[in-house]
Image 1 (cartoon, rainbow over the protein chains, first blue to last red):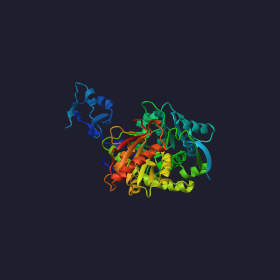
Image 2 (spheres, each protein chain N blue to C red):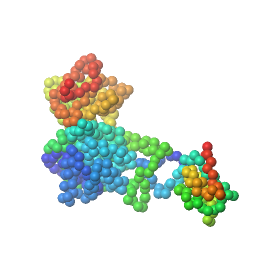
Image 3 (tube, each protein chain N blue to C red):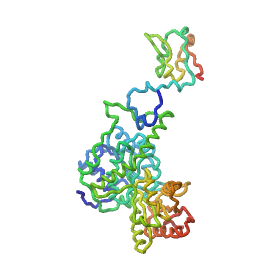
Image 4 (cartoon, rainbow over the protein chains, first blue to last red):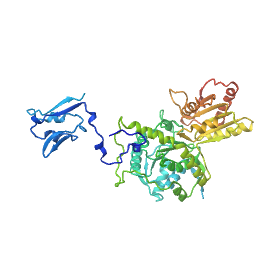
Length: 94
Length: 393
């Protein structure tokens, strides 16, 4: 989302377009990012089930990747990923 | 056609509220405001208003209920004094930053402690940076007139900021005066209907109030408030003119009393202005060139009007009914000084703090302030800048 001047935004910090949080990309808040390794993934969907955002892409019942526009790097997905699979690892963003 | 009534300041403002007929009023008692809402609640019980009265459990809740109602699109009011205003504090700032045109009469009373229920301006002075418009009243008539005008000022589309209409505790709030009140339908027509562009109850145009606003936009929203405050003074002058046509009373931003050829001038606000006008008359009768300026609109501060009015003056005293610890004099003094400094008006100034906690001010005290300026006119110098009137030394 491009940043607007004080003359362009609604007064009082009001949100007048409902559902516009999808335009507000919070991925930049992240200091660690989850990296998904497809070859190790057993498709248990524990990450998808636990992601609070949700930022796990699922197509036809299968994990296909991570939505970095909104993932804040909380690390829950890596935590719940079964130890034997170890398909998601947290790596430093910077 | 106006009607002449004998009313206390509180009753006068309650009549203004009756005629404004707000959609919602949050009610909580605090001396000396209690009687104001008491009277309004009587009007409510008598079926004279359509207002939904919300009986809350504290001033924090009173301001919260008012903010909620205003965000829902209602014309909402509440009233308070001193410690009540202090308890409202965080919501007072939220009202102005959400740009809700709430009108709140504040009956000025000393802020504790030690606990005191009588008049000074320490309560509203604390809120001078809160983003509310502040209009001070000299008497019950002005308190009534200001309350009616405040609705139109606050709701102006270029402003959308809340307003505190102040009246001095007990001195005005509990003293019976001759007050002219307009016809109910005249007030109704003057303020018009309130149709906010956004409201929580507008389901066709849903909106969110009070969302998180971080490093990326909070600053921009503060700049918008600054801009809106900058629009206020010309709107007050305009509304005042319109009100003048209706009522015969056009107030403007400041009132100059025998200032035009005056050498020595005092500046003050609120009920003491009446006593000071009498003192000016006495001194004028004795051939002294004195005058006074009453500041009506304190926030935003009427810089240009004051600067213009003071151009020819030789010595000035600012009388503050509040004390500001750790700064240079009282709040009004500090503002006046800041306004003059660096703006081409070089004027020796004295500050008198007076009337704290309801200490009476009389003509002798005001005379003392004028007398002390004689030496300043002669020498062009001020010996002691911050002084106290009516204090036992």
